[in-house]
Length: 277
Image 1: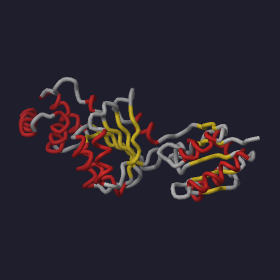
Image 2 (image 1 turned 60 degrees about the vertical axis):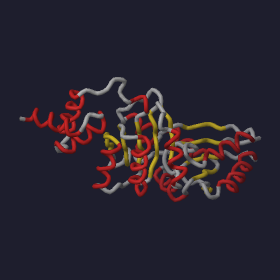
Image 3 (image 1 turned 180 degrees about the vertical axis):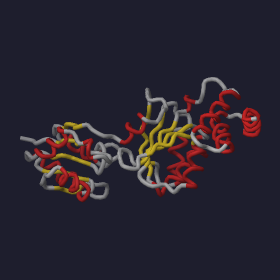
Image 4 (image 1 turned 90 degrees about the vertical axis):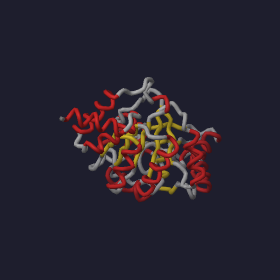
């Protein structure tokens, strides 16, 4: 009789997010398929569990996946985990899920933390409809093709990005999508958790001055989120006041507000300056 494949979500940072079901499933599995066995071993040590681990990641997924499938078909129960978050989401685990599904193996999710949805929830952008786009390609042509496809996307868009690629990604997004609101979260649930809510141009300026550290989730407003009516000078001035209250200089506040509202920067600066007098 066939065993079972469990898709077990693991903490994205804070070990306090371990659920009782997550821990129980890991303890009851015959073996665990892990993206990086060293990372998973730390989690198992925290739970005081000793379990056989097999490596399953992008560069060995074909051969390893077939071996895992065959073990489950022989009656063993496997828990699939990724380094952080939900396995099979922007993750080679999707291939193992398909392989097991085609073999008629029962597959059960053990839900838990997910970086994409967590970042969306704190973004302050529209959450009713969204699209998860994962990582952009490192190949310039494919990356621009991907962004061009999203130019008129009306839903909020979610991307993952590594710190060493963040600046180039922001430059490309600004070039293709135009300046629009973005929420950038890093190190979620960890000690140095931070969310920056700004515009693409504002984010580019920020991370040019402050070197990116940690793993990032970018949440970008969709094309339809551009205001239905043209922002007024008063809207732009309100934005300037808000940014000033956050500690931004008048020059930076005007630059970000002008980019967000479309109000000419010089006119906005003069209006903001006159309000201060």
